[in-house]
Image (cartoon, rainbow, N blue to C red; front, side, top):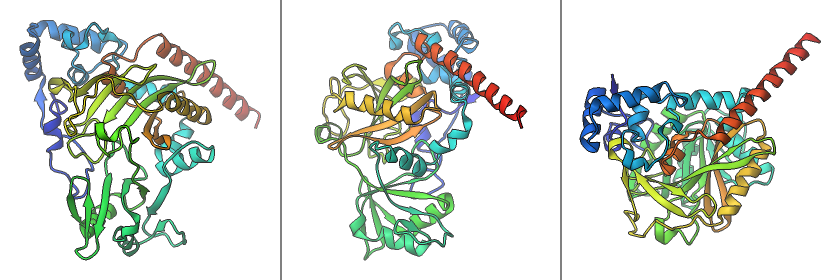
Length: 401
């Protein structure tokens, strides 16, 4: 058995399918025996002891896989600082639980499509980033925001008035397919991306058409709150806030702050160099910062690009950000759990994305403790009862036909 997550550096150095953006991530693998040996070397614990511990977690409530065991550094007691290892939820159990909790699967498509979800939330008055344009090849209907052909897309990208812009697929995840463009050079036919990277416009068009011809969204690039720019730079750093259903309505449950670095186009933690900050949930102040996963995990105190200290840094308008996530959960009432990606800006908190199948790994790594607790177990019980009542109503409706 082999695993591919253990070195973030290895993962991101794998050859990409597209020249303009990442469309996948993966990398070299390491066997279980090699992992156990390395874990034993780093902690001093006998490999057999680690094997027995992993086996207990694999059959525990979180159904932790060996990949999860190493990813969350569960072999390292010192790293977890007393956290209960059985409270961690593995990736496969994570997937199964969110499907069970969010049992209204007919609503999932609303959040899968970024254009639809943001338009829906904006109609209720929630703060979102407005669409600038969308590319969808083969359409014939006219719209001032619709780019229907390669020629229209090319003209849009070479129009200096639109910049800076952020592009992403209408249906994608983990920032795959994302473009952060600062400007263009019409004379040379080049696009200027974050990190002073210059992209040939025709190669970029090829990549978009090949991978995302059915829908590629462009938005104005939003900057972080002015107080954050000297600390973390000008790239947007979103907070992943989990909201959960309760008998009294939705509430904010857990959070982790994704902080970009190392020239990355987006703040997703899988990108090498990016960081996750654990927050004091009441104040929004950074308590710890983690870079890397598994054997590459390390504590970070200062931003590697700006040199600014991160510990103690507060998310601006933190109370309002949590309240906005709760308001969003109210209008998405059919979801028992939602992963909100929200950013602090000069205009207040803004919703970047809402995720119907949130990855618990972000908050588990940020806080260095698992998701399982009384509140989470109460959520599961609440949604199981709601699902049973929903199924009963459907059956009764069908019986009356």
